[in-house]
Length: 150
Length: 150
Image (cartoon, rainbow over all chains, first blue to last red; front, top):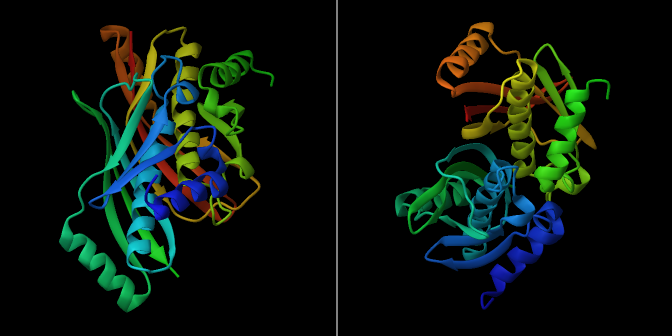
């Protein structure tokens, strides 16, 4: 991993959110404000040998949380990042031995507003979309509403 | 556990959805169509030492899934139970060393329709509400839309 902030994010997840270790969650990349995180099927399988919905949701929740973490680090801002609401659609069973969740592009007006509010009020919020997909299309679509507080 | 079906549900979760083992998920009771499932904080903590949102969602997802499982068993019906959509609100951080998620009462007209559709079409769907709460009120409100297929 060439990005030291991404390395810290990975270590923070495994140390401070220990269930991410048996889930096998691994941060992959951060490019153009899009965070990619990997999960293996085996420890997260259900009785149909596809991925357990709860694990898929946890993966997406972490992509959103990690996205806010990376945005704050980039701007040298601090704050506690918390999810307030989530919505998820499970479109197709995930049977790949491993799979990726990716943050969808953030509207610049949305991130501008997020930073403006954070700098002026010391707290802010942002809605983030995350997708788990393969070349045939999306498996899972997720939206999380995150807040940052002192 | 005095209910043998509940015992089978517990064994099925730990055997077929292995991430429920490190999550420490334990089925507690099934009364009046309300399933209660327990989770400990420690393996599911986040960096604020409250429960990780992804674990809370997984817990609620299992309560909904297990509720459909118990309804099918009671009526001697078979089918694969799958969640299609979920919505969740995280209202207060969960800092209790262990906590319970409980299925909220199911409207009889909703469950009648669910069984009618399943018996006539061989597939059906039901929306289920789940809550994680203490005596001060709800921590988490969840709604999941489940389908049953052959």
